[in-house]
Length: 123
Image (cartoon, rainbow, N blue to C red):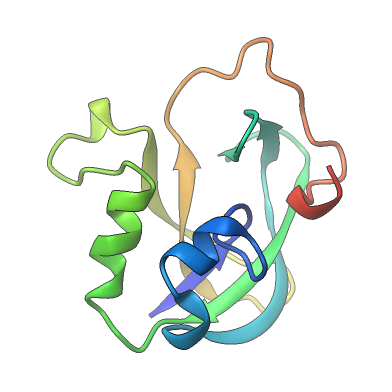
């Protein structure tokens, strides 16, 4: 199972540490997807529209149980998608062409600043 992570779950970020992902995921490398990244304050929101490019990291997740923990961290409830802050969806990465899970923001972004670089680290 592959995960494309672009915000607070990337290497060196608070969520990565909180969920102990350094010991639970295998970093494949940097990658990119099509979309627009918004600065929501303490974390970013990915919208899979627009002409932007979002930079992130591609990981292999050997532990399938980890997905439920990340779902909870991202406030994604697969049984109540409408009330979820994020949705777990499949994307194809631009550099490696891998099919991976990522989390798209499921709320409005009106008035939120766009991260023009597409990179949460250099917002």
